[in-house]
Length: 226
Ligand code: AMP
Image (cartoon, rainbow, N blue to C red):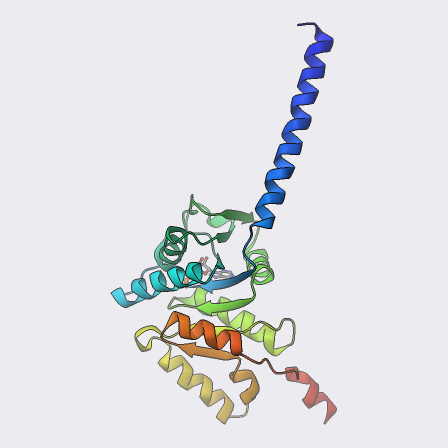
């Protein structure tokens, strides 16, 4: 083959590669689920089998309802369980994992899409952008931090996406009592407290999220007008 012909075939094959990648990416976006729910949950399994079972039922229910799962992208703990359940029932699963945690939390290697980001902040922003609602399963500090942050965003009117607690085996009972206390003590409005739905059943919780009406007033607007 002459040098000219080599250069021509090389360029043609690179251009075909680019076009093929473009087609694949377009097809991928077209088949992305119409609705996604972001799940925050433990990177551990917790002390009870109930937590693992609930994570599995949640992943299965999302897939059965054609709802995409957005989550932290790990293969460990309840995070891995919810992702495996959705994948096993043919649901799309989108993981968002900071580069620094890819080894520690062991990136799931079988996701529909795995987005590697540079920071925790980028992770949370991307997970929120990709999702229409949020559910927290039992978990630790990370789970609570993520859930509280998106809840505060709705209180401030940064988004209008409902947030729910999957209250497995009464895991969130103590937190719910404490949150009610914040309303009694006039630190949180009932309307903002009510954004946070709870149920022990994944399907019933999703129904509550779908029916949730988010308050139109932002936290600070009333106070500033007084
Ligand atoms: P945990 O509930 O502590 O097991 O953590 C659950 C998930 O939350 C893990 O993927 C953690 O990496 C993640 N996480 C912890 N802190 C943060 C944070 N500040 N921003 C985003 N994700 C976090």
